Image (cartoon, rainbow, N blue to C red; front, side, top):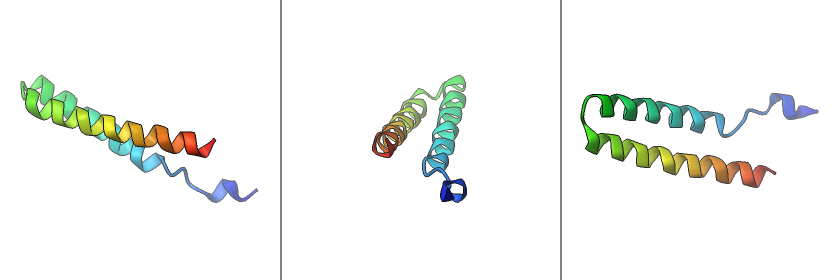
Length: 58
């Protein structure tokens, strides 16, 4: 009943994940492959965190 007022804990993390992917895409387009790979690795770590939270939620 009160679940309506609880926010999704992964919502903020998903926004960070999406922002990292956008930054990585722009870095790749600009030819900065080192930054691209760093940002992609950070995004993958966040994705693992999101998946872990979803597994624990079920």
